[in-house]
Length: 78
Image (cartoon, rainbow, N blue to C red; front, top):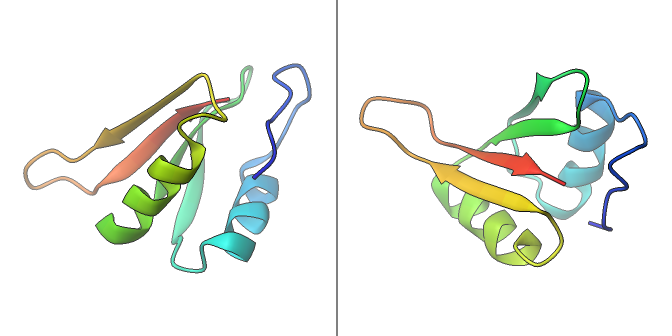
């Protein structure tokens, strides 16, 4: 993934298609905020950890959310 410019609007589909090239296990991407590029990536834990490790230096914020009895995901702010 290349560093995302925060002033350029990006859709969840655009992000999903970009991520799927490098991480085929990604299930879906959901925009958290349509006015800003804040999104959540849903996948198996091993895929999420790989993305986390690869992206942590490329984005402003990346959080692994893994609550009990909740679907696990990454919340990303470019």
